[in-house]
Image (cartoon, rainbow, N blue to C red; front, side, top):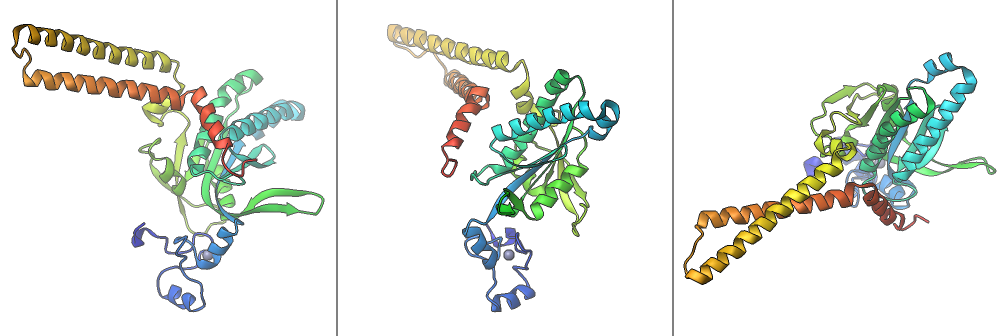
Length: 331
Ligand SMILES: [Zn+2]
């Protein structure tokens, strides 16, 4: 990371890490950590002790809750919320989330603790998208339209077990928790509202989402956020992931690529035979280049289809999860 890309203040405690005040602080022994340059040396000690962890927090709330209660009454609403929470927890944990707690009709979950994973922000967004895409089917099952609003933020939090001696809950405390909750509060039904540092890690999959500056309750500085839709703005690759046309299209692409490779191979063999028979070259250099290009593109297409099937199919997801499960500290 180049110096100008480094944070000007500690990402955990907010102490300045550059400027005049930072120089004064460094006299007191608190300066930019060399191991964790976006944090101060004091916070880095806690990070290295494993108490402060970079987390991605997810709040997933049932949008229509108040209206549901008014319309259905307590008993039926209970059923609906219970089903929603089960579904949400199921989808989130399938993506590797730790369920922190349920707050009414809202699930609070986080990624990257207690199990470490490099792609925690991307996994959180994928999980949220999985939840949004699960809801139409659940709505059909229950006979009520359910929609969720999701807020996601990445940042440092203190994780550990909190509570009385008898009841201790493993939970996370930090600005990032409040930030994710506030983002969720500003997300509309069906949306996944993510903080800027989350978007930076998933921009490749969600290109071109407009940046918004929001004032979040309890935060002095306005913060940038991005509204992701589970469908729509997600682009062709995401559309393909969930389209019933996915398999036929991939099979057609693979068949076309295989056919053009087979044709190129046959043409090549025929030409070789002619060359051997007549002892002359019967292909121009430009034809040869074109044939090579066709072969290379066909190979690339086959490779793409293979990777698409391996990485983005339910079986592929299962395989990736099985690798994740073997990560140290999982058990
Ligand atoms: Zn600090």
